[in-house]
Length: 173
Image 1: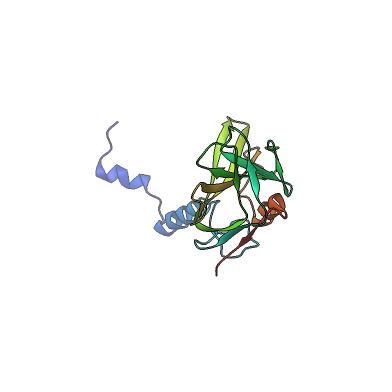
Image 2: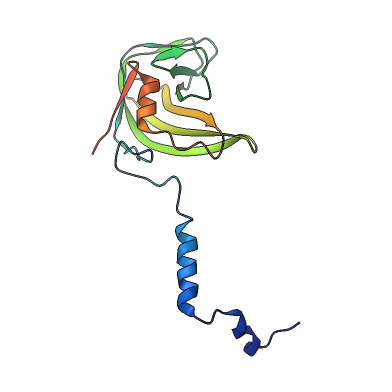
């Protein structure tokens, strides 16, 4: 069936204001769930460039590994993926040592990815680090697994709990 221009008008709502209202409501529901916030207590806090990760103790890089696991305030051989844990990543395979230092956070990213469709997602934050004295240190990635409808961005409070006394975060204003 071919529609003439006269018949096409019937496809449009009688009230253009109603169409605008419907579109506004629909697009408002499409807001970004990973929106940023400047409130450090918000789950969606955006870590500003120039902030610092302060490592309070020397950490050993295990033999044959390129990361150090930190969870519940201590280093660990592996992470419980269902609880927030962090990996401090280095360029060279261990054994090695990352000494206590202050690392500048060049940038921070928030993301998520499927681990096992449709049941499991990994939610994570990556902090890209810089140190003039330890160029081997690349980044720290904090993550946890969850069900897609239950998971969300990792709040700073949970990253701080995972790091405990091993490391701390300081944010620039």
